[in-house]
Image (tube, rainbow, N blue to C red; front, side, top):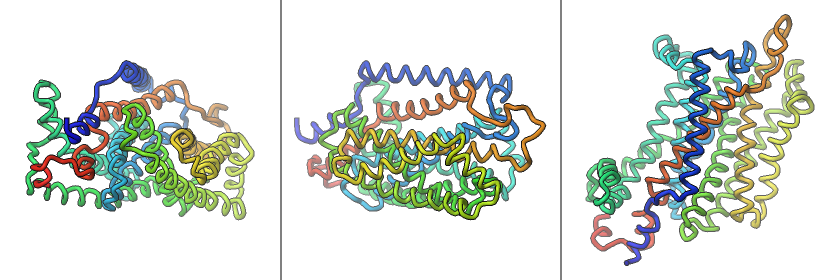
Length: 437
C-alpha cells in the first residue's frame, strides 16, 4: 500500500468496538429516561420540577447557557483557525466543529424543554416582539445552528468523496456518502467554490457567535435583577464561554486521540498550544470575575450585599469557591508549567474546567432568582430555596447525553481528522489529485 492509502485507512471512520457499543447504549438509555421524565412533565406540568414563581428558570436555563458557551468556542475556534490557515490546526478543527454543532443543537432543544410545552414555541413567532431579547435569542440560535452545520459540512466534501469511492461495495454507507458528497469530483471550479464558501461562512460565524453570547447576557441584564444588573455581563459571558469551550475541545480531543490511536496526527505540540490557550482564557475570565464581584462588594446596596454574602460565605459558598478555585485558579497554576500541559494532567484539568463551568452557570442563574424584587413573605417555605428535582436532573442528564451521542455518531461516520488536507500537507496525494487542487 502507498503512503496515501495507509493514511486514508488510518483516518477513515471505524466500526465501534464493544466499549463503543456499550457507551452508545448507555447514552441512549440516559436519553430515554430523560424523554420519559419530559413526557411526565408535559402531562403533569412543571409542578414536577422544583421551579416556582421566584426561581422560574432553574437548572434548564443554566444548562442552556452551558451549551451556548460550549458551542461558542467550538465554532469560533474552527472559524479563526480556518481563516488563519495555520498548519497545526488541521487535526483539531473538525473536532471543534463537531462539538460546536452538537452543543448548539442541544441549546435550542433545551429552550423548548424550559417552556414547559413544546407548542409554546409558536407563541414566539406569533406574538414575538422585536424589543424582547428572547425574540433575538430564538433568531440568533436558529441562524447559528445553520451556520454551524455549514462550517462542518462544506469542508467535509473532499473526504466524503473519498469515503464514497472506498465504500462502493457497502450498500448503505456507499449510498449515504454518495448522497452527502454532492457529486464532488475535485474539479477546479468545485475547489474554488468550496474555498469561497468556507471563507464566507467562517467570517460570518464570528459575529454571529459574539452576538449570540451578548444577547444571552442582555437577556439576563435587562431584568434588572440583583447579580445580573451589570454592563459587564456581555464580555463576562464571552470570556466564560472561551474557557469552557477550550476545555471541552481538549477533553474530547484527548479521548478521541486515545481511542482511535491518532498519536501521529495529534501530538504533544498540539496539547502544549491548547494548554496555553486555556491559560490565556482562564486569565481573561478571572479578570472579568474580579470585575463582576469586586465593584459590587465595595459599592453594593443592601440587595447586592446580601447576594454576595450568599456566594462568598453563605449557602452557595462551597459551590462558589469550588468553581472559582477549581475552574480558574488551579488550571492557571498547573498549565503555566510545561509538565502540566502533558496529555494526562491536561485532560484532568480540562474535565475539571468543564464540570466547574457547568456549575458556574448554575450559580449565575439560581442565586439571583432567589432574591426577588419583593420580600419573600406569605409564601410556602419551598419557595425560599431551590434545588433541581429528579425530573429536572433526568432531563438535564438526557440533554448532556444527547450532545455526547451526537458527537459519538458523527465521529463514527465522519473522518475526525481531514483526510485530503492531511495528505496534501504531507505531500502524499496521488499525482492526478494534486494537479486538480
